[in-house]
Length: 488
Image: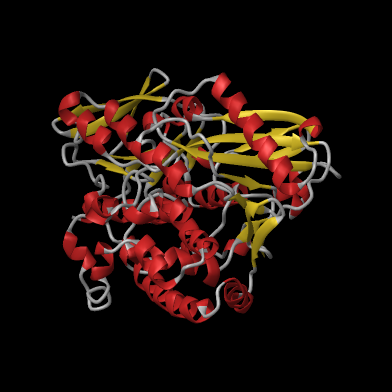
C-alpha cells in the first residue's frame, strides 16, 4: 500500500533515501528550510565565480556508481567525472611540496625516494587497506547499526582486532619519514578524529586515496545534487524549499504531522536528514531519545572556518586540491579536541577548482576555497574571521612565493554561526560525529527512533558516519529500515 513519507532536509542522505522510498512506490515529499536544496553541498555564485560551499573532494567513486546503479542509471547519465592528476599537493615549507600522483606506481616511486624501503611497506599497507575497503565499504557500512552482531561474519571476524589498534601506531610502525606519515594520516581527517583515536580498520581510507584516486565532477559537487534531484523527480519525489519545519507532532507514540511555516502537514512516515539533535528538539521532551548530557559528551568531528575567495589573476604553484601542512597537526588537533579554542598555528586546506574547470571562474581569474578545521562550539566573531583570513593569506603568499592579497576581489566567510543558522547544526559542527571506536556502527545514534514508532533519521550523526559517500549509504540504510517496518 502506498504511504506518504515526509523527509526533513535535502542533503545527500535525504536525497538518497527519498529516491529509494519513491522507487518502492511511496509518495515522498522533501522539505528544505533554505532556498536551495543540497544541505551542506549547496552552491555559491558571485560575479561569474562559482563555489561548492561544502564538500569539494570526490572519493570512493564506486559508492556513487552503486547508488545510481540501484536505479538502473550511471553517474555519467547526470555528470561527467575527471580523474585529477595530481590528486592533490602537500606543502611542508617554502617551495617544499609533494604531489600525489593519480598513478599508484608513481606513488610507490615517490615513497621510495623519500624513504628507502618504504615502497615495499606501502604495498603491504595498501594490500591490507584494500582488503579492509572490500569488507567495510562494500559490506559493513551498509548495515543499519542495530546490533554488535552486524560486525561478525566470516569476512570480518579476522579483522575485528583492528578495531582495537589505532591508525597512528599502524602507520608509524611501518614508516619513519615524518612527511610520509603525515600523508598517510591525512585521509583520517575525513573521519573527523585524531589518528591516535581512529581504529586501524579505517585505513581503508588510504585505499580510497591512493588506490581509487581523487576525481572532479565537471561543474562541481553540486552537479551530483542536481543529478540526484533529477532522479528523485523522475521517481515522483516532490520538493518544497523555504519550508522550515517548526515541530513534529506526536500522539500515542506516533508522529502525526510536522508544522511547516505554520501549516500542519500529515504523513504516515517521517524521516529526518536534518541535524539529529535539532530534530529531537522539534519533539516534546518525553519523545526525545538522547539527553543534552549525551550530546555534550560525544566526540564531534571539527567544524570549519571557510573562505570563498575570488582572485583577479591565476594563482601559481598550487594544485586543484592543496594541503598546507607547514605547521604541526598534533598541535592544531589539541585546539580542536583537547582544549577547544581557536588554533594558534592552524593547518589549512585550499581548493582551486578553476585550475581544472573553467566553470568556476572568469578567464584569467581564480576561484579559491580555504578551510581551517576548528573545534565545535567556540566563539565565532568577525574579528576571528578577519584574523585568520589574514593569517592564511600571509602563509599562502610565503609558501607559494607570490603576492596575492591585493588581487582579492571579494571574500565570503562561513563559520560556526552560519552552520547553526543554515543547518541547525549542533554546536556548529560541520561533519557530524567523529568515527572513534566508541562511536562506530551500533554505538552511534540510531536510525530508528526508540520512542516514536514512525520516525527515522539519516545523515552524518547516525550510521555510518561523516562524509559524502557515507551520507549516500546512510540514506539507503534509512530507506531500507522504513521499508522493512512497512512490510512488517
